[in-house]
Image (tube, rainbow, N blue to C red; front, side, top):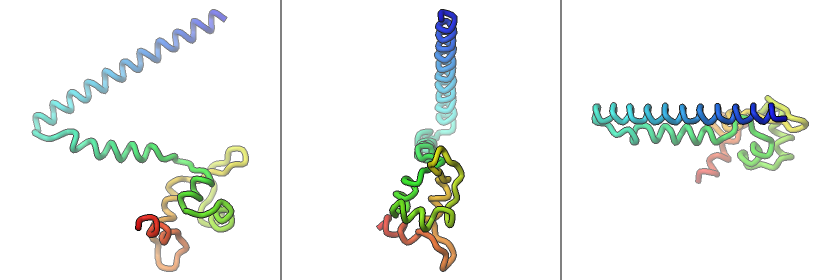
Length: 130
């Protein structure tokens, strides 16, 4: 038991050291970036902040989405999703237990406009916007 406890403490110490190293690296990077921006006469925050915000928003959305998430996004009921979308417009990429999961990008692409006459949910996207 003491062996495992000592190993746990060792791992915890290593993680703390790695985190401190990462923090130092980020701080140095930030300082160098500020120096470069001052040298070029540019505002770093104006250039980098919009890109970081977009990355954070993209990272917050899950890559694989559940049936409920997809149905809510498409603004339809779950039964309608299974009847009209599952296996026709979207295909399962992952199944955990009995729960199917779909790619978020595929669900989002259903809301995009397609060629005339294609079965999409782009009309619902217009309703959501205005």
